[in-house]
Length: 178
Image (cartoon, rainbow, N blue to C red; front, side, top):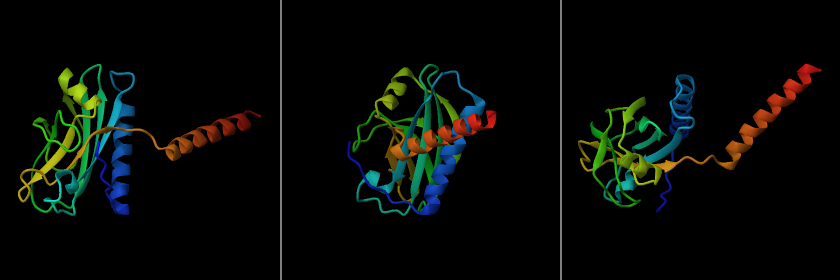
């Protein structure tokens, strides 16, 4: 799959982290019918649509997929659109660099933890990285920003931080018992 580098400001990165944490926290507190929902994410930019779309807009979307119930919990954060947003949807099946029909209309604006029921076919598209998300605007009706959903794989530094935190907690617990 083609990979496009997207640069985000520190404020945009912080917003994405907060959105991801809020999504994870709400799913943890709210629970799920599946033992382990799968996390997919999309970094959205105008580059997704090629050189014809010039925009300062950037966005981020998370999709928690429960493949036992065929439910998707979707969150989206976008900033810097050049004109009024006219639509948002998830499209598929499409490999990176190709386009498809929309199969799930999303709410306008930024939103958190909207739950949708999918077909088994749509679940398979997402699981096989064949789905993308896009936002359309009045000035870019074919799409201003978009990005392919991909399975979230923790970075080694993130895993190291998690395990060091767990190790510190276990050490503290052990020392406390003494």
